[in-house]
Image 1 (cartoon, rainbow, N blue to C red):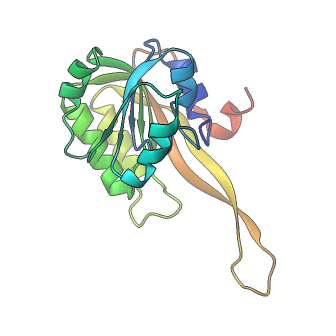
Image 2 (cartoon, helix red, strand yellow):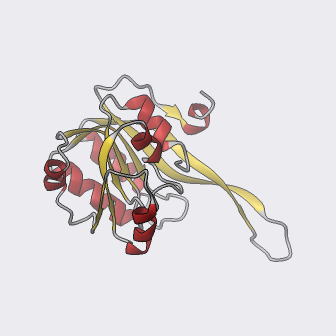
Length: 195
């Protein structure tokens, strides 16, 4: 299952039961598309870290294609053809490291002319030197996307001083988007997870 309920957002916002997952990591653990594939969605995954490969090879429930490749230089149009997918996809998950690479991968897929009902983008605002959140929002606005869910966060415990107890900190990780044509009013993540 996904870490922040990205899969449930895709189920809510996407009209087209297809996906592209950029930064798949493991087939189940904190995976944004496992639930979708279990519900019959078609798509493909891109992952650069081949240390995850044995997990995918052993998983008998993940049948959609995974490419062991660099998401920044990947030919997304070719992969759509190879997987018999349309140029308009339901859900795009973009989560690689660091955020500048995540943004470069997003630009690569968008600028190949592929469109999406919804996108989850991991900007890691809480730990990045550059805040990619407004940069990505402005970029996607030019391609007719709007913010759907903002301030997507996780709570983590930190110890600032070894002598003191850990304190809980809210870490802002992602912003989620929908195409302007999708009927979805912008909402804070803290409110969305209560729905």
